[in-house]
Amino acid sequence: MKILKFGGTSVGSAERIKGLLDIIRPQERQIVVLSAVAGTTNALVEISQAFAAGDKDRAASLIHTLHDRYRTLIVDLFTTEEGLQNGTELIDYHFNLIASFSSDLFTPIEEKIILAQGELISTTLFHFHLTELGIRSKLLPALDFMKIDEDNEPKIDFIRENLSELLLQSSDHNLFITQGYICRNSFGEIDNLRRGGSDYTASLIGAAIGADEIQIWTDIDGMHNNDPRIVNGTKPIANLSFNEAAELAYFGAKILHPQSVFPAQRYNVPVRLLNTMEPDAPGTLINKEGTAKGIVRSIAAKDGITAIRIHSSRMLLAYGFLRRVFEVFERYKTPIDMITTSEVAISLTIDDVKYLSDIERELTDFGSVEIDRDQTIVCVVGDFGVNTHGYAARVLDAVKHIPIRMISYGGSNYNISMLLQTEHKVEALRSLHNRLF
View 1 (cartoon, one colour):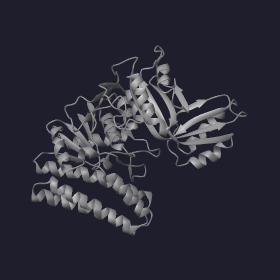
View 2 (cartoon, one colour):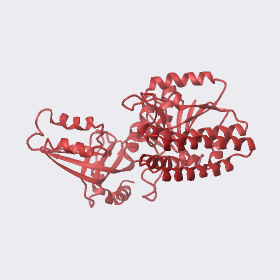
View 3 (tube, helix red, strand yellow):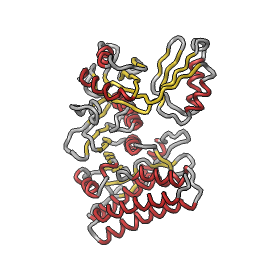
View 4 (cartoon, one colour):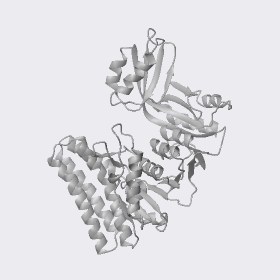
């Protein structure tokens, strides 16, 4: 069985929803994972923010605008009176549900329910579309099998057991449709896998059932060797190892959700990145082996980074000092991206600043603290094992005219990372591309 995930742009219009049948083969056994229609989740976030602020008029206006957009979509999608009626009843139900929260105390629980509506609508609309065409499909509600624990980690065993049972109950079907992104938490409440989580859903499903392949369909023809929005002359990479893909996804390659590589890697399920607009393009295959050794594969950049330096000549070399620093970030569940140390200071980076003021306050117990915002991590990914040489020199030579805040090399065999001010990102990406490719 194959898992096919389609992102928001792939279901961004009636024409594109219809075009999925150029890719999906209903006679083959497969699970199709859909994101919300492009722009829907952003609109639902705005609606939630309006409810949270008590601005019911703004919320009502935003709901009306999004509802109208879906009314137009279903007119273009369905060709029969019955299909249009089913589509109308569906969207009316979901938008009435969203509007009903105007009379309640609005909490994060209600917000997550609202954010789930996009995927619930897109999957059911596609199911209705297939029904109108006489194509058999089965809706698999993700809320019946996709679950996370109290640490927001997926429960693979739960997913496997419950999804396998649902598939067994519908063994006479080949084509299954389910929602990306949404899940239930440890309390049984509607929750989500955070933004970009539809990739994660596809990977978790593929890992749980031991799929033959996970296909991630977007509007880009695979993972490129640099950001094509910024750098001219980039090329798609035919094959990447799981480790290389994980580094690229984590450090800014937008085509793939950072967490989505790990379930597939753990259970050795190949992932293929493909382009909905060019379905015949080969895309990028991610698997255990990869192909190229001892070369630079790609460059990625991650914005929104904050650098923190803790300076303490008194405590740095003391036993347990690093542990105590890391415990501060652990208490606030704030991951660290990069870290470097010297005799008297630690420098590290984070991308989640939700608890930054609390973290800063606690770190001052160890020494002086400096914080630099508006930073970017530029990551050069390739095979940099112990037997390779010269790559660090080439990377640094390419950016010798750019001020570098931090450098990380050796923590992994697959990347060289540099921290710099975001204003220098474009120049760094272009200089590295010209020097390394």
